[in-house]
Length: 256
Image (cartoon, rainbow, N blue to C red; front, top):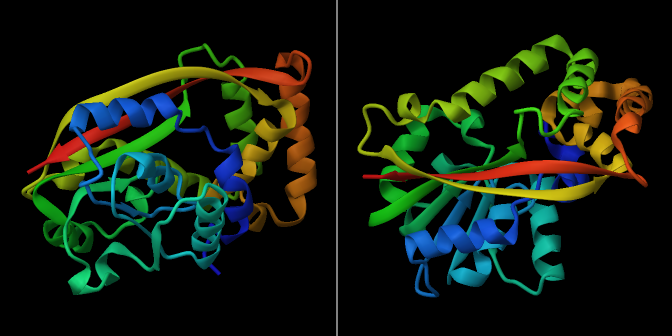
């Protein structure tokens, strides 16, 4: 069982969402149409694949975790959408899968083997195609006053090794110039969409379980006490059970 198997049922609904305006903005910027094809690597529960689905034609999602692929399939069925789901990694994709106008990667780049992934991207990305490295996260500039304490509780309960790996993953995700250095691909423009919404206190507490470093598998017998700890912290920030959250959603354009 993969390290995200225990998060699959929670990830789709509890992670910071990609708002509709994000997908509309990126679609306009790139001029996507129903003739455009898209493959989402590390698709998880299909957040990017389903979000871009209404704006493009062929959509393929790829993930090595069976539980995530199942979650993506259920989400697609619930939305009345069709996406082709492949269990595996970029480097294990069949050679006859073809090329794509858009290759999206969410919070998955740090789990990928750099050399193998770059070699496969050379084959997957159409000659004038685009790679999009996407993320959606709570802003850390003080407008989410609950965030620092929240992350400190997550760090406190996470096994030290997994927390260190999570920090390394965050740095890798952001250092795209290093990741793509020496390849034919280079980061160009960054698309940023900022939104605010209300999230339920209990949903925000349970969000901690969607991260590999504080997943149910990582926390083990400490799940309930860790949830009570973070819920107690969040209690002073809610209004009628809801907490305001400002989110920034980003798409880094990477081109040949």
